[in-house]
Image 1 (cartoon, helix red, strand yellow):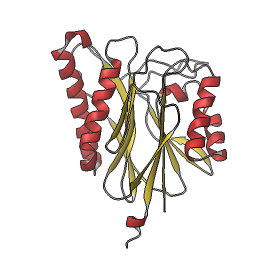
Image 2 (cartoon, one colour):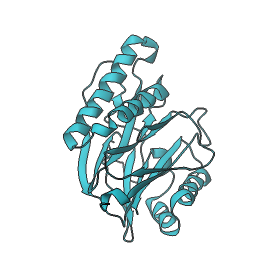
Image 3 (spheres, one colour):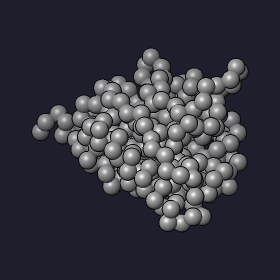
Image 4 (tube, helix red, strand yellow):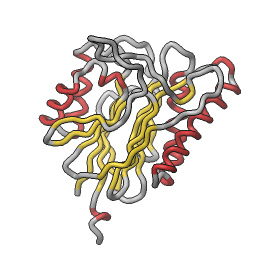
Length: 251
């Protein structure tokens, strides 16, 4: 049996409404498994063999506009269907373009959903690398013994002096009254067994400082880590939906 055949990808996922919003407009995909507008009372852990492309992503429906949960669910459904074919940066860009087209087409069919949109961020796990991607301000973070680093690229306006976060985005899947093309951020990074990856909506990263996220990941793993991250967001007021997936590779 080859080394690759003995390795597995562990994905621990959680999605919660938070303390302020009435509905959960976030969605999540891990391989063929999707979670749309649903609250998970406990972190869910999934195990996948390392080999074929495995997509793990979150989508954060844009609040203040109709159909955020529809846009996020459409996006993860497309990524779940296309996941096994996402073997290159080009394939990921094309998949995200198709997500964007699908959201605008759905809004065209139902004018009550006009301008619905969502952010998306995630990673495709390959045997030796990770294809990190995003459109909007949902994030992919990389954690190891040296700390925490952001490997996605926020589509947000520059922050003002003293401002730590902003809810504004400069690019999204859908989100406008007329079709707007996207330029997804996609990059390849080496897959490292010593590193863990956090794929999350800004419901986690807005209220919880990166230093606290790093400290939690140093102290905990798996479902306990996801629970403690959720707890930190709740204790900070949880003004938005909180959705995350922790990704790691092991024997």
